[in-house]
View 1: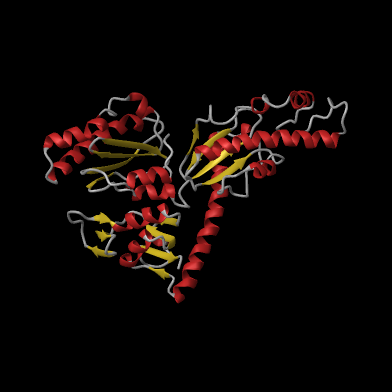
View 2: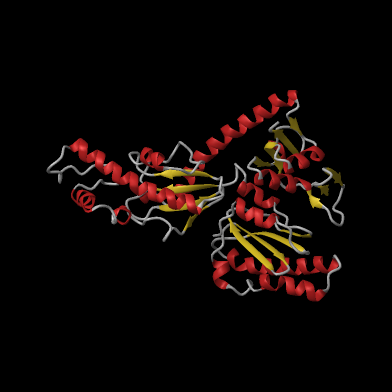
Length: 387
């Protein structure tokens, strides 16, 4: 599964040669519906071809543009290894696809830029999370959403065991490690200690584990550069505070899963992690709602798209609430700061809510992608300004 982060969003938001095609569809991980996914994708490509031609492009241009995506149709391995949703982006000489833990609705858009709002929930604070399982051998990292969880390959990124992590230590340390090794399950093996007190040995082997976790943290930090999805750690209780000491990832949630992850299935791990993240997100979302209502009285909020879009470009938005499944069509002139809205999509239009959400994320603001009934007031978009 492909990781989607702010760096990828920046790439998609860059200026691309027209036409820019955005295709979204739900996919399946198992069952008979897996066999139907390429058929659904083929139908979407037919629809895309017609849309491109209807916009005035030649049939040969449309065919050449869609050729890379058509190459996926007969890729059996590709369709057998899906997540919950597929996002495909095509422009002349460009082709990107992402298998993501999000249940997209079928959508085809052809415009002067890629349409990224269906991705916003995966980049917003309430969209997705990571789970790191702590173990003496084979620590694992999972990428999750409310719907599912998938493992990320870590081989070559982090040490695969505490022995591997410490194999280049000084010989004395290696000897101490071999003769008085800490049980990563949370117990200290004291029966082999001969020349030191138990407390000294326990402290020394805690430091061994800390070094091991620091190496894991370094690899995770490199892998998740540009991310701001939350991280949950799972492991026996003894290990959680040690990893927190080693951690440098800024979005680690304080509450972990204090159980041996080796005894949990992926579904059990997902259920436990979602319980943790859901409680955390509910609390942060309610705090954001309260802040929105408080600041509404001092001019620090808005639900006017004509004010919000320019503010998103100018790094003024601290928190944005945007409604899923709705579009606000129009054009924005960044130089003039002028927004023109239309009741329906016209040539050259873009979804202004999509634009505001993307710009807010690019400027490190917080975005909540919500259903209409969960918005802080009865408007499709609302913002808290930084100043």
